[in-house]
Image (tube, rainbow, N blue to C red; front, side, top):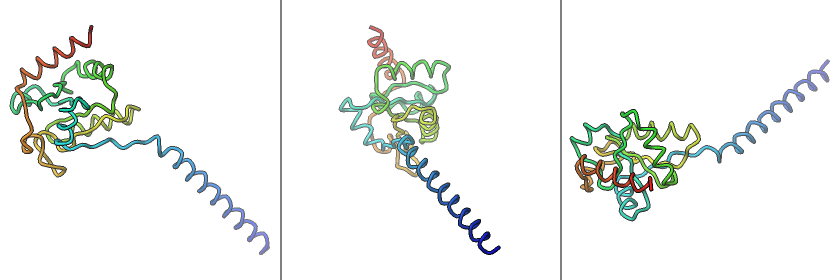
Length: 167
């Protein structure tokens, strides 16, 4: 009877170890497929944007652009407008995801959108995590003293750029 109990415990231990090994193998195999959203500070984004190594999408509302301006060189593509997905797709046709970053007011919406993209298989789009106004990640684009343009100038620049894509 004692030998049977030992065999059963031994068998259960082997099953446990084999199951654990399989689970760990799956985690290590799947781990590289999971990528964390790249985070970027406002100064890092501005430096890359200035060199032409990055396109920044300001996903705030038109009212927010009117109130504070738009980061100089950023494309105003509001997530609050019905053509957001179409405009974003147009950007993706022109730029690799690793060359795109999103900014909002304080980093919440840009984090949500980049997370959603990542969960749906589009990795590499960066989040300018401190946003325009700052949060615990940093003081924000405006307090860093980085340049802004008016909403109307940013929209005109975006339309001009978009028309060059259509050619």
